[in-house]
Amino acid sequence: MAPKNKFTRDQMIDAALRVVRGRGYAALTAQSMAEQLGTSTRPIFTCFETMEKVRREVCLAAERCYRGYEAQGLQETIAFLGYGRAYIRFAKEEPELYRLLFLSAEGNAVSKMRSSRTYVLPLLMRIYGLSEREAERYFRDTWLIVHSLGTLIVNGGCPYTDAEIERILTGASLAFCKAVKEVPGFATDEYDRDAVFRALTGKESPEAGNT
Image (cartoon, rainbow, N blue to C red):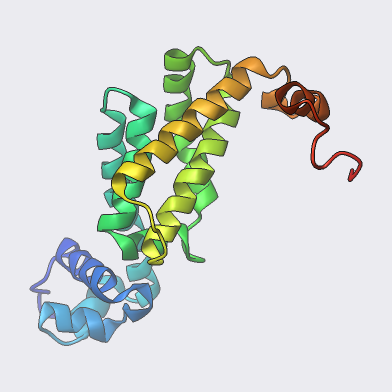
């Protein structure tokens, strides 16, 4: 009979997460896990059989961590602003998990955005008085800004302070909310771009004549 494994499955997944947090997803190997556990690689393969199974579990654990941040953000007074703050905080505090979930082939940022949309949209519709289509447009466009800021942060290229990021998020939220509410057809991309620019500036759209 094979000897009993002295490490639980959860302990091994935690060890794998520590590797990723400290050295990045590419550093996750049976050997690096074994070093974290202070053992040989044998217990790892006794439990998981292959490293591919370990990697799948690590991706799931990283996503659970992110969803925890997300849930906290949605508890704030202004839930959608809290969601954006939580996304930024996750990028700052868990940069390697952010890379794994949102910047790697293993992750899928757009898929996760769409998953979040299912419970964020009702909040937007209720708080801002938007239709479902308007809420979808508002969420997508503001999420792209939040994601861009998170990516700048984990890549070490974000020059903005927390206070500046707060103002960026607030300004974007206001701009998109105003657009979907006041520009007819904006949410469905059926608005008259040139007419909107003329109303705002007294001039044609800078792109007029290019399409």
